[in-house]
Image (cartoon, rainbow, N blue to C red; front, side, top):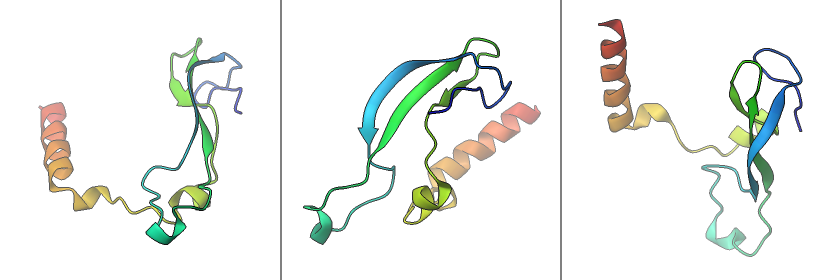
Length: 92
């Protein structure tokens, strides 16, 4: 578990939400794997009392998170449209 804030580096982060252990997002298992145990990781959110940043408290190795990651934001026309409108709004 991380104890230091990833932004301000102080030791001021307190857990405010603990969702227990959960499977990785978008890491779907195959039907033939449904009876095998799925890897699960702690999912806890923390709040930095110093800089007010909200962050995850536990790191999962990137190669583990993204080895079977199926979601690609560019494949979502709804998200692409939304982000384009958001960028235009911010520029205005």
